[in-house]
Length: 222
Picture (cartoon, one colour):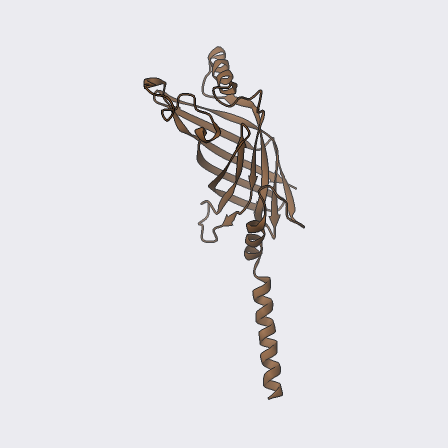
């Protein structure tokens, strides 16, 4: 009887150890779940965005066509636990809005100035936007090259904060982390209303769609 009791206790202890420890993914998910947006967990590996190898691209559409360009990154970092992404933050330099699709310098400067004005992003008043990540979820079933994370967090532009969520493909390889994402945002949530049919009538060909597209291509390293 004593021998049977001892075996039972050993098995119970082993089971408790397995359940309490969990695997790397479970541990990372638990940490990410309890983090506040932008918060860095203890003992996290920090990878800093390589500004020379990373881009934030934008595309806006209207009834008569579209425009595209890039926005600058001031700095940013990602937090990893057991090589799993659990959080991070990105600071966007709104003073580095660039228009890429217009070749004529004068017309290009006009659109860039309009985007920087109070009609759009009020860059002189709000020169930075921030995205603070938290509660990231990894999809273990994702196929190669498909988005394998759902990234959630708070995006602040023009001193207005809204929670956003989007799919991303994240890969950790040796010293590097790469992250790619392609998603839409509704600009009117951040009080960018110029040309919006939701707030203005009879715009005709001057109507600008509320959703604009963001493409992230980020490289970060130790």
